[in-house]
Structure formats: C-alpha cells, structure tokens
Image (cartoon, rainbow, N blue to C red; front, top):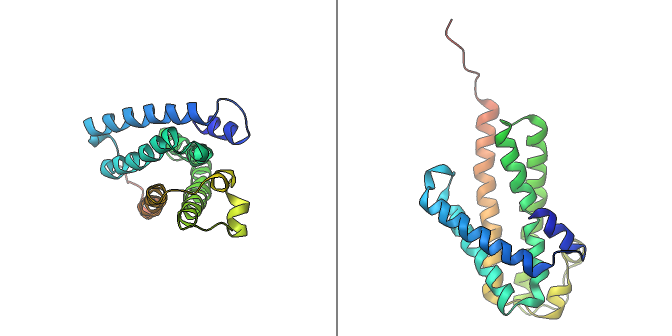
Length: 187
C-alpha cells in the first residue's frame, strides 16, 4: 500500500480511487480478523477503533469527497511504518530495523498524520490561508478545491490522537526491552 500511496502522490499509477477501494477491502477484512481473533494482536480494541476512522475517511473519499482523494494516499504513507513494524518483529528487533522503524514512526505518525489532521481542522473551520509549515509538509490541492467537512476533520484528529497514544505504549515497550536484564541460564 505504501508504494501505491507514494506513486499516487507522484501523479502515477494506480490512482487514488483504486488504492482507497483496496484499503476499504483490506481494512474490513483485517477488522473482521481482529474481531474474530483479538488475542493475536496487541491492543485489539484500539486497532478496531482506528479501522473505523480509516473506513469513515475512505467512504467519504469514495462517495462525496473525491476532491480530497489525495489525502487518502497521503495518509496511507504510514503503511511504510506498519511494514517496518512487522519486519522488526519478524527479525526479533535488530538495531538497524528498530532505528528505521522508530525514525519512520516519528516522521509519519508524529509529524505527517498530525499535520494532515491540523490541515483538516483548519479547513473545516473555514480557514483559506494555511500556515507555511503546513504548505511545506502537506499537499494543498484537496483543501484548495473544497472545504473539509467537520466529521472528516474529527476522524483525522482521532487518528492523530491514536498515534500519540500508541507512541506512549511503544515508548514504554521499547524502554522495557532496553532495560530488561538478560536471562541467566541455569548451569
């Protein structure tokens, strides 16, 4: 998904709508899988809430919010971080993978997603002139075409809030792993 999101933002194939349609299918199936097997993921309720906000944004974009489809691709860049998360777990947390994962976490989850949410809140509030820092970080073509509805700004804000909640949880886990004493094997 990350690769398609990136190519979409570069005005290339496959386009925002097919990517968002694929996201709806994937998110729906993943939600059903998590609901059926919650013990297989950490924090299943938070992930399901996250999926509900993602689906709300996708349905909006596919129905009445086509001018804002660019933001579907923009927000899906976070899938790079999700992929690195799976890789680091699969490889049992090597340092190089931890560093890539944590760097992408900060850039995408703590800067990029909140920047988009801030843009949405400002647009929903009727702002027409956006701060220069947002203009440098976030694509502007969607908000320049049409104002963001309040419920879309609220959904994006909820996703941004979840990023910070998960950051607290991640930080706690990383610190616990870093300061865990090695197991001494019985001799």
